[in-house]
Image (cartoon, rainbow, N blue to C red; front, side):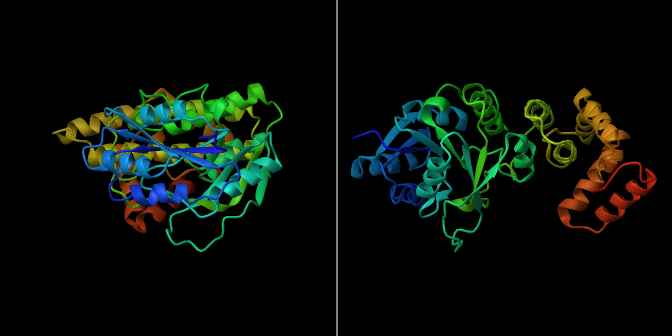
Length: 353
C-alpha cells in the first residue's frame, strides 16, 4: 500500500457500540492520495479488539495494534509511531469524522502550507452543516483565544505533520489534560522549526464529538484534579506569554482558569471517595491554599479581572466555593445573586467584562 496522504489514529477501549460508525466515517473520506487508519486496541475487555481485526481483514487501509490496557496516551503514542502518512489526525472511537472532513482540512492546509490547521466540531450527530475548507487565519498571538474558543485543548480537531508529531509524545503519566500538553509541545516544535507559522481555523465543524458517553471527562471524577490542572495551566500561561498574546486575552484566560480550578475544588466536596466529610473538607481547603492559586489571584487583582469565584477563593472558603459551584451546576438563581454580591463587595475595583 502506498503512503497515504493522511492517517487517522483511533485509540480503542470499550468501543463496540460506536467503533463501526467511527471507522466507517474514516474510510468513507475521499482524499487525494488516500487515507489510512490505525486502530489501537488498548486491551478492551469487550469485543472491540475483534471488531478492529474484522475491519483490518476486509479493508487493507486499516491496521490494528493490540496492547495491554495502558491508557489512551499510550494508545495514541503507539498509533502515531505506526503512522506512515504525510499528515496525521487523531479520532476517538466514540466520535466520527463528518463527510468531507479530511478533504476540507487538507485543502485548508495546502492553501497555507506553513500554518497549523484546526477546526470546529459539533455535538450533533446529524448536523446539516457542510464540511467546507473556508478557514479563518489567526496569528500566533491568538493562542489564548484558541483556548477561550474551546479549540486548543483537544488533539482530535487538528491536522498534524506526521514527521513533526512523531518527534514528541503524549505524556503517559497524566490521567487528565495530557491532550493539552501534547498540543502545546507540538506548537513549541512548530515555533522552533517554522518560526513564521500561524493558525488557520476551518470554520466548518469537521468532527462529530460524542459528549454523551459516560466515560467523558465531564462525568468522571479525578482525585488529583487540583494537582494536575495547575501544571497544565502553568505551561499554557508560559506559552501564551511567549506568543505575546494580548493582555485582554490573558485576562480572560486567567478568569477561565480560576473557574476550572474552583469547580474542581467543589467537586472534591461533591464526589471525592474519602469516607469522612472532614477528609473531603481538608483536601478542598488544601487546594485553596495552593501557591499556584494564590499567584493566579494576585495576577487577576493586578489585571483588575473579576470572577464570581475570586472572593470565595481569596477567602479560602470551601463552603462558599461549593455553594456557588453547585448553584451554577444546577442552574439555581443563587449563583447570579452571589456573583453580583461579590462584585459589589469589591466596589467595582475589578472588571466584569
